[in-house]
Image (tube, rainbow, N blue to C red; front, side, top):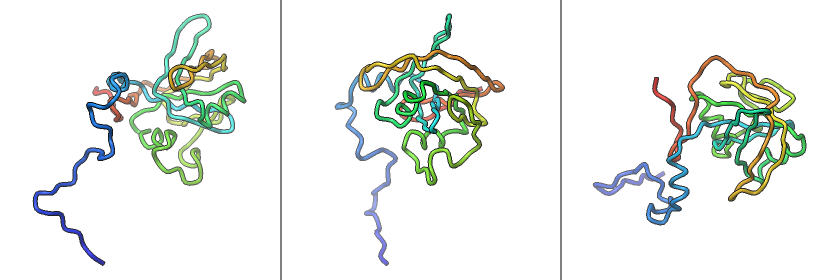
Length: 177
């Protein structure tokens, strides 16, 4: 066994040594990072799921939901095969869950192995989510480097008022009361 002693004055820093230097980053990506977005979990029968922070609800006749998802994700394969999916609103307690479904946190036993899940015809939803919607898939098209998914909202289940989990500048945040 050996010990490595840092030289005097050497510090362990909290920045990513592999991050792209600020001057070389895409200005559009930096702009997107400055737009706070609610973190949602999209699930489909299979089951499959994906953390998505680019979700938009459009009220109307019919009510619609739009979102940007990865075309190569298991979620997209399952949702397109089933023709339906669920979208759950995540809260501050769901940080680890969001990371797991984003592929940033280990998922021993599978993505749905931990936590309590409510089975629905649209896909499983976390029992403690801030609410969820069941959607019928209407279509999708390439939009930038993602798929713009268009759906009709068929079911809405809201929980008690809660604090949403937000994603802003590469980190999870929450609203202050």
